[in-house]
Length: 66
Image (cartoon, rainbow, N blue to C red; front, side, top):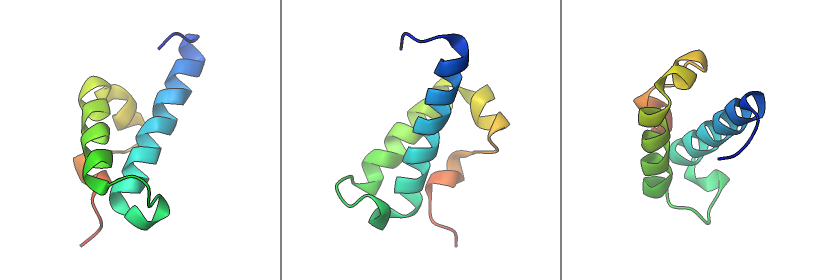
């Protein structure tokens, strides 16, 4: 992704939030499967763990609460 550092962090945070929401509540975006959303979220989480820590996200953020 080619963007200024400040914008890049914001764009990545937006992507992480979106995939977490889709994984947690699949009815929010019916055109995307929750499995795909969780896979994309976990890849972003592995690649940018510091950003996830800042946003208080972990691997369970993409799953519905029990």
